[in-house]
Amino acid sequence: MKSTLRPALVLFGALTLVVGVLYPLAVTGIGQVAFADKASGSLVLRDGKPVGSTLIGQSFSSPRYFWGRPSATGPMPNNASGSSGSNQGPLNPALVDAVKGRIAALREADPANIAPIPVDLVTASASGLDPEISVAAARFQAGRVAAARQLAPERVEALMSAHTVGQTLGLFGEARVKVLALNLALDAEPPAHR
Image (tube, rainbow, N blue to C red; front, side):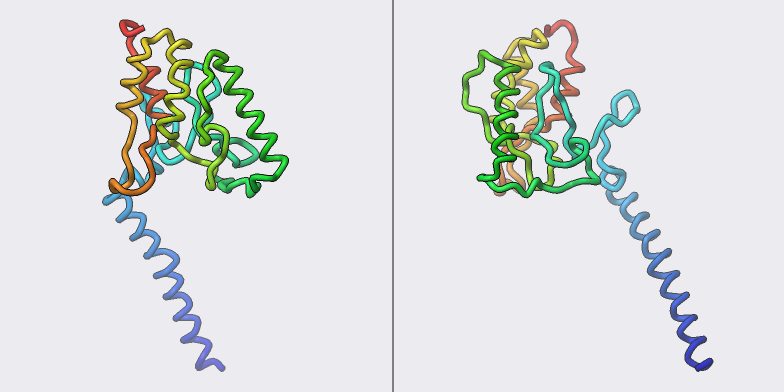
C-alpha cells in the first residue's frame, strides 16, 4: 500500500499545481494581454469611474433616459449573478400581468405616443441582462427623451444612429441600440444643443 500511496500523492500534488494554479494563471494572463477590455468585464468608465458594462443592461427609469429591455433577474433588475429568464409561458397570468404593467408604465411616461409598443420593451430576454434594444424600441422612446431633455428630435435621432450596431457578422439578428452608451452620450450633450 505504501508503494502506491506515495506516487498517488505526488501525482495529486502535481496535478493540483498544474490544473489549480499554473493553468488558471496562464489563462488569466493571456486574457489580460490579448483581450484586456473583455477580460476586465468590458467596463464603461465616466470620469475614471465604472458606470456599467457593455455586456450587462442597466436600469433607467427617468423619462430623460432611454429605457432598456426589462430584466427578469432577481432580486434586483440586471443582476448578473441572477441571470436567467422568467420561464413564464405566454399564457402564464404572471407574465400577462407583468406585460400589462410595463405597457401602462410606457403609456404613462409618454401619453401622447400612440405608436405600437415594440415587444422588447415589455418582455424580458432569456438572460434578463440585455444591454441593447431594437431600433424600433429606441425610436418609440425618442420623443419622450427629446421632450424631457429639451433637445431637438433630430439631435436625439443622430445620437441613436451613432450608437446603433448592425447585424452580427452582417447576417444574424437585427440592428440594435446600445442603451448605456446612448444615455451617456445624452448626458454629455453640451447646452448649445438644448
